[in-house]
Amino acid sequence: MKYIIFWGLWITVWIGGCSPYSKRLEAVLKYSGDNRPELEKVLEHYSHDIADSLKLAAAVFLIENMPGHYTLSSPILDRYYEKLDTIREIPCHMKKLFQTFPMNRWEYVSNAKVLEDVKYIQADFLIHNIDWAFQQWKTNSWLEGVDFQTFKEYLLPYRIANEPLDYWRDSIGSFQPHLEQKVHYLEDCRYSMTALRRQFLERILTYRSKIPDENLRKTEIDCIQISRMEYFVSQILGIPSTIDFIPHYANRNGRHYWTLEMNPKMQVAQLTQIVLYRVAKVYRQTYSHQPVFQVRNDEYIPPFFRDPFHCDVTSEYLKTTDVSLYLPRRIKNRYAYLATFNDRAWQPIAGAEINGRKVRFETLGRDIVYLPVYYDEDESMLPLAPPFIVYSDGAIEHLRIRKDSTLSMKMHRKYPESRVHEYGYRSLADARIEASDNPDFKEADTVYVNTKRLNSGYEYIHLDTSPLKRYWRITSANRQNLQLADLHFYNNHLQEMKGKVMNVDSVNAVALWDDDPLTNATVSWAGMDFGEARQVSQVRLLPRNDANGIYPGNEYELFYYDFPRGWISLGIKNPTGNELEYEKVPAGTLYWLRNLTTGKEERIFTWEDGQARFW
Image 1 (tube, one colour):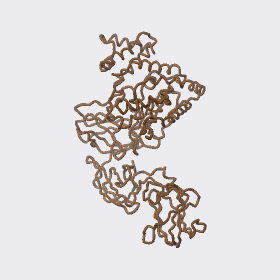
Image 2: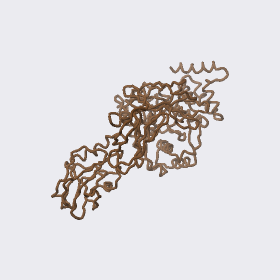
Image 3: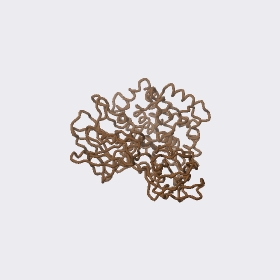
């Protein structure tokens, strides 16, 4: 194989005539400007010995794909890097990782200067990186079976993000004893190398307190940063890896990034996020250039579709469907996109070239609502065709308003129910309302026993007969803790009764009386001392929940989707209970219920069998 690559390169040189390089390589060398001699030193270094033929091919791969890779530099970043270098307690490989921490912080990168690798990288650095990567590939026993294509894409690259270039591979030697100790596990190595990577990751996190920037020390580490850490540790350990990501979930807010091992000896676990949530597209980060949309006639193309360093791998994770659309009208744009609903907006996740009035989108995730869109000259997203559903079996339904039909909607939530809060609902099963003349409740009247399955809405307990007692409480019949977000007592005029809070065994117990459905407390029991004997006529309860139900005092607005106009409001309403009703709603389309008072979790839905089906 190495001989074929070696002679293939030099046949290309001979055919090329005057230039000793391929057209692509020559174009990159020309673009490198004054740095061309450094890049040519690398090519020259590996061109003398046929034994270096694969290293020469690796060098060509790195250089041909180098445009677009860069270091960010700014006064604030440079000061941070300088401080980091002076801290002797932090090993160099961990400093390398901490260099990536500011990359997602706007205040660090907003005015940063781009230093392109192709114009600044040094020959000695590139040669050193190639030699170290080949040493890992050829000496680590767990890399047997890893081919050259996998190696050069997933182990050879020299950077993580846009941090400064340095000789981080030199730190690999300190890990070698640990690796050798683990070798005897490699007969069953599918988990051992992953565990080893996690051990080093834990060590890295212990040094976080020494980061010379308070903001970066305290910043929550998200999935992007975790994936970079795991990727870097994999590179140190010699595990070919990459980062796969979901740019936008299709049925909830947010995104997700994770590290994937590209070693045939490693077992890739099923990704929990793809099992739990709906995903329209999965992409993979690459070092090599991937095809991108080409700008023509000043057509606006979103940055994601101009980024050459990711490829579509949706079909590796999901059952997918291809969708061909006939557009209602011709547009001058070359490209169309599909958007999914995320964080209260349509987010583009896939694109394709338009052919006349036809466009075909490939490998789409199922059980998802998509909206075809395009961008005008003002960079505004506009609908291109009505939204459609790709069902779990691959069937497709286009959503259009049925002008001869309307609906009456009674809604109880603006977001699908989550299993996370199920324990909070169950904790109130068999809960009792008790009244007593004694603060210890040793002699108490059981006024009410809950026999219903509660949900995210308020529960109003009306007491037809009520004793005259000073102390009132809610407690559990089965000794489990109650998870409550709200507890209020009312008299027969439905006026709230105030008193002294009793048995506050939770630091968050004040949350039970703050009228905020998102705050909650876990208590063995909670009650009121009214100072004198009182009658309670009504008790209001709210289990721990996500505040996505319908709540009195909040303002709500219902929208329906009408192509091509977009979202059309049906007006604002203020409910008096746990239910919200709208009449004469256009049928057959998408709907969106917004809480204008609080919260940010909102999902689009269709109306099926008298209830919302969230997407």
